[in-house]
Length: 392
Image (cartoon, rainbow, N blue to C red; front, side):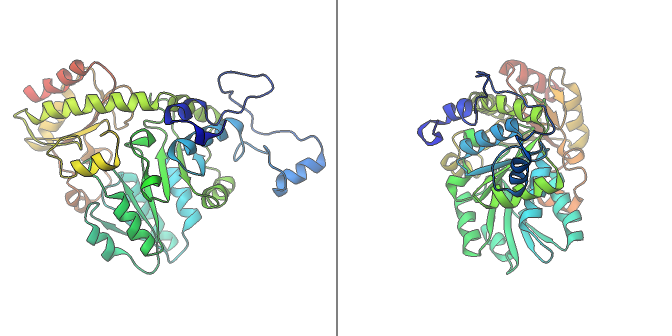
């Protein structure tokens, strides 16, 4: 099939699958570490890159390649490389694009481990990062240097659901010969396609909504050739942060229902956000679907849905926030998100626990903040479980 001829839902179900001689209807899992060759000449040609084909599952596996082809088609990218985790995707991108003396401009409002990577480990390689306010375009402009290689951000942001203007940042990046890298974890291609808005590269934690049921850990980078198919692929081939065939198969099956799930997550999250807005124990609710959200109109213009994450501030700081979390009986207390099961966490002491107090203060991650990744349970059950603690 030619992917360009089909709609998003069809791509999510049909693209990437090349049937074997067994003519299987569901995609096969190739649980093999290596592949055999017809003769020595073919082996030499494969290793030299003169002939396409499988060699070793660290970098060539049919199941993993099927997942990569499907996700690339859904994001509208030319190529995709799958990795062992979302952080492995970001690290592989950095190793492919950066060298000592280079510079990154990153939003402050990114996943805490990404902040640690950029702020603690990349400096050991001679790579600096400037952290800026996600929604302040002038701050992005001032931070760019002659040696800046890429701008990096999540939109919506974690956990305050701020929305960046992707088109404006893409224009800024390209005016300064930089790449724009978007972590599309919260929206997925079902709700947002950053490449169509001017972004150059997308990174994913497949652990989240792409899988959708909390079963595997994985990641991916999507973008143009040869940057992805050669440069980033070469890093994966050499350093080995590869996605396993089994995890690729699980994530690929998750993609089949992605659009349905993201629509359902979005509907439930907006319902919860509206109810939380009315509760006297809540100071503020963060969700881009609310008309009160500062970037509500921007979100409407570049997303087809508002996502499944709601954050809110409880009056009384950490003590009361923990009481709300501990009062839940159905909702899972875990820092993961993107699951069919609703999860709840206290960002200041979990996902952003290793981030400095200064960065937490500058990004609004206070002690009263709670993040809920709304699952697919009955919305009344979700609401009642969270309201229980608030009422107390």
